[in-house]
Image (cartoon, rainbow, N blue to C red; front, top):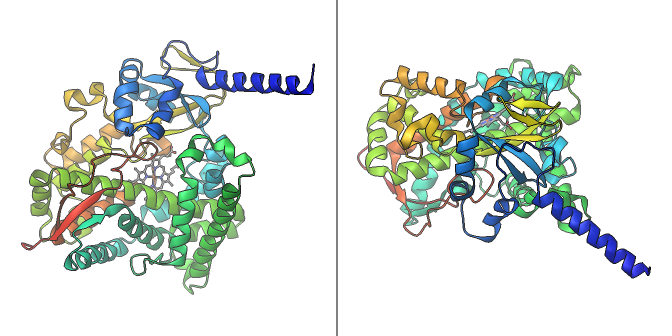
Length: 489
Ligand code: HEM
């Protein structure tokens, strides 16, 4: 056989193997749950379809009937779950359904190089060490910077309005707000992007985000193994950003003569490093994840909230504006029924992290009574599915109805707690691995939305094609709003 023929045969076998691995789930996957066709996940890259439409057309029926499906994502077959009993089981049984983030799933990717091994993705003792270090700073924080930043944010919008620029694309502006909030509240330094848009660290971050969250490389992360020049540059950029960030945090905190008294999450991480509980890489990984989780997720929820307030402006913007009138204290904002019910409904309707696939079975096990899952299978949660399932939320599951949470603050809070405990809203995850930033994120929402409602009025820009993001984090895609000053203060 000639060399050419042999090479042709090897190539044919390789392509057939890859095709089979992509098209069909592995033979040992459970047969009693449906398979979502492998191509579904690629559709948003080809057609103008958003992830909620994709869910409605291709996933919803199977998911609501069986509570779990087989789905191809991130170069492998996974099991995606939305039934609340199954989610509850997964959240409780950390040892069987062990967290296994990008550092384990795709360790060779630029994404893994960015976030490393951190408190969100680690498992076991390492996770406990990280969690011990960051909990206090994320639970007990000074919210004064959030109020100050909300005022600066409103003044930036007003400046544009006064110059005649009424239509504003919200993404970049919200990102600046979210970065300043998390850096000042949890990392002990000021990112300062609200004061100065063209700030070197911010520009660096914007550049690496474009590279890391590139939809093509997120779908085919194994390409990061190849010597593609743009990806090599991405790795270099990520590495220099991480160095700069950690140095900035360390310089700011250690040079602070009151370091021992500082209670930022980052100060406790540095103390854990000084006490040799974590090493330098672990310190860097966790500082980066606080920045990433601490600004990406609130920014998504904030944009979603602005979108819902614009879409239902006659009802909800007016009702909330009336409610927040004259209230400045953040504790008093936490007691307002309409504002809190509105935010909970925004999380329910559009959970910012709509799908997360980051657990892996450590042994063969059963999900519920009869779904047998082999060892080493990735399990994901479909947060969007659980909060849109009529079994959990009745016939209005898809509708925006903040009043469903109750009319007084005690009932609203109780229903929020119940929804989290029963896993009918999993937007902030649940169980022992529940989000550590929920309190901070909700405080940010209340303070900033209240300030905006007092100072501004807004509506959807009629030129904005109302769409949500096609994949990944869920929020309105390139949201554009029309602003005017609120003259009735
Ligand atoms: C609206 C805003 C937010 C949402 C929707 C959200 C959602 C989530 C979700 C779904 C998880 C579980 C992630 C997973 O399984 O991979 C999580 C974990 C976590 N979040 Fe948030 N998050 C938000 C804001 C924040 C903020 C502001 C911080 C502050 C740094 C933060 C810190 C964390 C941490 C440290 C964990 C890991 C908890 C653990 O595993 O022990 N989050 N969050």
